[in-house]
Image (cartoon, rainbow, N blue to C red; front, side, top):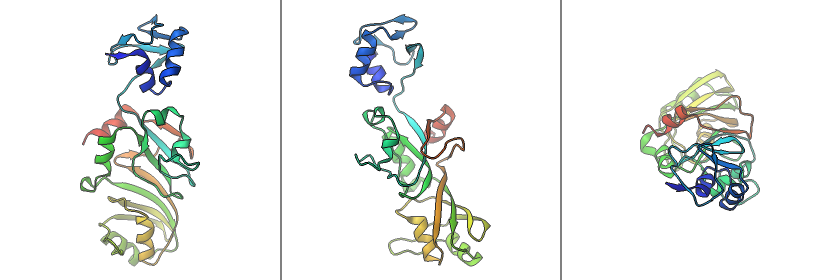
Amino acid sequence: MIRLDKYLGESGVFSRSEATRAIRSGRVAVNGEVVRDASAKIDETTAAVTVDGQTVRWTKYKYVMLNKPADVVSTTDDTPKSVMKLFPPEFTRLGMFPCGRLDIDTVGLLLVTNDGPTAHELLSPKHHREKTYGFECLPLTMDMKKKLEEGVELSDFTSKPCTVQLDDATHGKITVTEGKYHQIKRMFHAVGSEITFLERLTFAGLTLDKKLARGEWRELTEDEIKILTKG
């Protein structure tokens, strides 16, 4: 059982104080009956809660897919360029954070959640979660492609074997299982090329929704959540 104002707050609809005002003004119904007591206890797993006639669902964790634009930083820090500025204030109250990081000029799929345990597992090197990026680069030869796929020795580590698909000498896709700082850019530089554009297309079984414009987001579907949390 959970207090009604807490239910609404944790659903991301209101802050607790906003929820209290909405409840007292008669905007909230539980199982079809208007409830004006913010402290009323409800069963969060079965109660049908509506605000202004719109259904509100409570979940312990929230998962969001963002099509990250360039020039925003994958951080929760309160800075003008924080990726969290793209979301409503409720996301901060819910403890939402980006799962991993994309460079400031890298665009595409970014998972934002408040599920710490799942995020930790998704980012753990031992689980080898695949990530696919579309890229544009300075001309890449077949010899360079082979070196990338076999693993590249960098100053602090050697990249694991990966897969590179070329559309032509300057466009393609690369699938890696690591996510070290500037890794793909450093790999290309090490073999004699340079990345000029990078977009993450997949992450841990998720695929970027092509309907999302840069900077747009949506909540994950139940099937997508199952993909992430299946272990």
